[in-house]
Length: 450
Image (cartoon, rainbow, N blue to C red; front, side, top):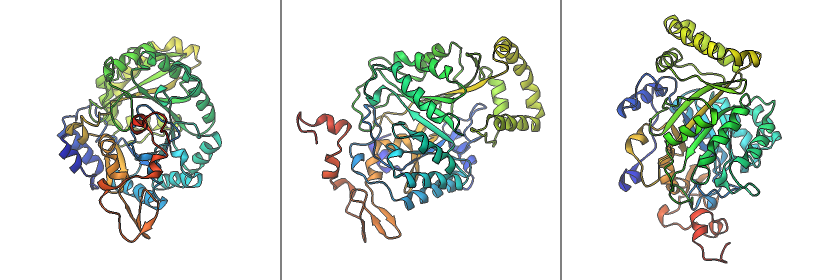
């Protein structure tokens, strides 16, 4: 995308038929095929609801902007309006990721109300957090409000004290897993892959395999030059293919992570069963996978209750006996290959999914990938691709918001009768200087830290 195209980009308007519109986007971008879930099972992969720009870490690959720390928390009423807007755009069962910054820095009663609003509107709320303030007590209260998923982001870009390498951070991951034990939550982990940890990803993957049964999905985001991050360019290539190789090494199985979600240059997804500590790939037959996708079009699986998910799958196949008949030989082969592990594990098997997401650099946005985006951000004007939002974040977070009481100013938090002058000429001022992070902090002369 050219700078002019980026500047001119606007959030998407609502559509009367969200799934049909998703299918049309996949066709326009050449991404529609039998293995495509967008436009078949989903109208949108996920919509991020940023409830704060504040964070209690200073990641070297942070996607927030230089001035994010200057911005006050968006009023609760505006966030409720955005939640309703997401429902209008994509319909029920949409996954809404409550995020930030770190969402746990939002007032607790407001965070609970946000999660409850998402669930009350028939959508599925998840929490993306670094976990520092995500106590068990808070997670329990959020579950009562309707939280479905919690995604813990843990990796070496965060500069956590006392951890020498990525593998050492498995202790943090284990602690977070214990906080969720017994709660009706689907547990996910996010890991940014960069120069400093790419060689350790197999060990991290092996940890997730050992925790299968508690951890449902392990997501890996590739290093991207966007936001206020200070990490330089990769010394060695980090691509979807290299990360896929690391996942295969860590699982000890020939995982087929060939299923794209949206654009094939952005996302890859795979699923496996862990039985008796061994990984068995479930996406190794494209024909069977295409049958399953066709049979489950429009079906939403319960991520909190595995039994209900299995029942939903069985019901979908019963309604498509032809697909069921074609899947049976594959299922028989799988069961035979797993027979010894199933006996040793007394029939216990745990699903573990893997997701690879390749965010684009802010200066190298591709129009086709933006149009096929499945990870949006809820702005006050509508959903916008996350990569595009990161490239022009200040244009959105520094813009005054119209409320019932007047114009809310994001820098002061005050309400006025008219919005402030054009954003580009505004200065974040002292409130920002006290909270410099990322590139601005790195650029300050020594001894001048606020």
